[in-house]
Image 1 (tube, rainbow, N blue to C red):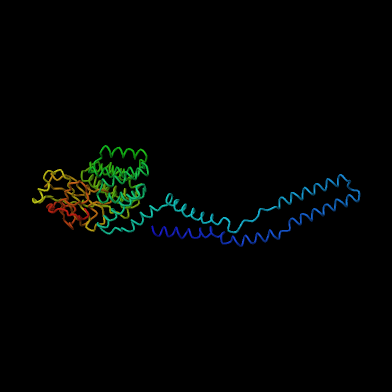
Image 2: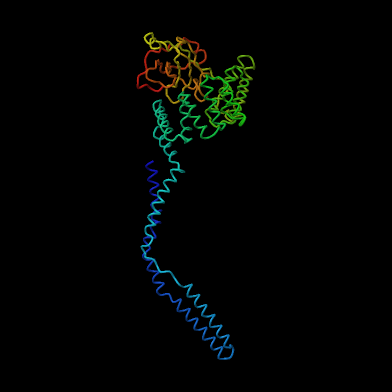
Length: 446
């Protein structure tokens, strides 16, 4: 912002110079005008012309061309003309060269204040502050990701009516797994921008994953509203494809995903949907609904229709899975007394910390001990799935507040650099994830 005000000040300097220029020239202009008026011979010239015309009339009278009446009328007309010329040439007295000096600096002050007020109203200082906040918090790892969220949260509090702030903030909340905060940010964006299909589609997607990939009545209402306006909205079509896939309606899922790919601008998301189509074809072949060779051929054909068949493999990748048994240390059981309904999060993140959560399971602490299998079906978004990583970090956290972000007092257990199993290897002995410590006041990113 300092650079902004410096730039505004630099622009005001030439404007002020132009306003003050008349003051610098006032004395010389006054003297030039005074000299001109002092040496002005217009009145003498008018008198000379008058006398010449009177003499002409008298010569005409002497020759007998004019009688006495005509001579008198001519004189009266010439005298009237001389008086009119004299009145027209009469000038107001010159004012002092110092006259009006106060008006110029007053106009300068009005210009500066008016310019600043106009910029505050119509300018983009908020957007510059947002850009500065983003540039000041580059994302390198989970800690810097959390720092970016905190900085943009502060910007949202400072300028709650700037839609661009909420547009930058809600994807960060979404990718961090803070779905409630993401929905609040998206609500603000919809309040400012209106119920645009793309925004409603994002809201439907958030609520869908928050409901554990369930097409609730609320989600369905949003889907219907979007499709009534834009029947080919890719986010909604992708969501419907996921729901169809989860319920083994593979042919319907493929149809939704193909339509979604046709209108999708994100290459990563489009690639994820094409892989989903391949997985759906493979499951149809496994169930005997189509011949395996036909499924493979149709999958390749579907990818080619999206103009990307040269980049994608024509074979189905073995499903990525992690099976783990989550237990609670006996020493911590007393901490849950009277709060067995506390929320239990089980999260898988890529070891490099470059992607949003790859798989999330949300349940309650009274289910412990439990065995759970993480797969692409537990993804929060198509662009971040378990199959996209070779090694992951696993976290099991009991949150009394129900918030996905770690807070002091939460119970937690971790496993680091776990190899993602695929195919037959996924059936091996489950991993043991032990909740064995209490999160301190300086809790790390979840």
